[in-house]
Amino acid sequence: MTRLDTVIERLKAQRSCLNAAAEALRGNDGHILELGLGNGRTYDHLRDLFPDRDIYVFDLEVASHPDCRPDSAHMFLGPMSETLLTATDRLGPNGILVHADIGYGDAAATARNVREIGPKIPGLLVSGGLVLCDQALDTVPELTPIPLPQDVEPGRYHAYRRV
Picture 1: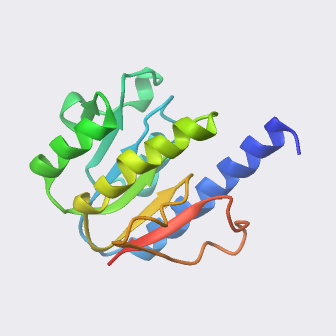
Picture 2: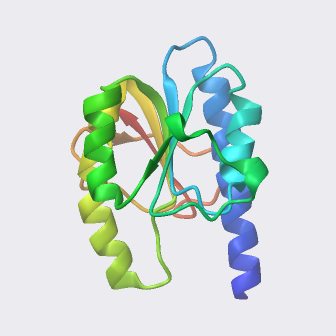
């Protein structure tokens, strides 16, 4: 599989997981957190799926298209290892969905990022809240794996529920 095919399959899996989460969370209270704003494509999709929710984004810096970024009150800029702690203090465990795009092209850097960020995610979620991630978070004890949508190949994306 080419790198282009790989990214297309990852994005299709991401969209399926986000759409399934929106359906599963219908009627539940809580805000949305996007870890990794990037160019803003996923944030834009989340706005469409959750038009009446506060969506908070996290990234080292803003690099998104101007139409695909939140206002400054909904943006946490800086290292996620620090901004997630700030957000926990400010927002508390009131998130219903965390989408985390925290992988790098480098396996060692990705593993470090998962170790640093993964344990901080549950503190932002209500009990029963969902986490969708491009990386496995199986070492985070407060997160229980849940089934992926049928069209998502196992290992392509990861879904969890906060216990």
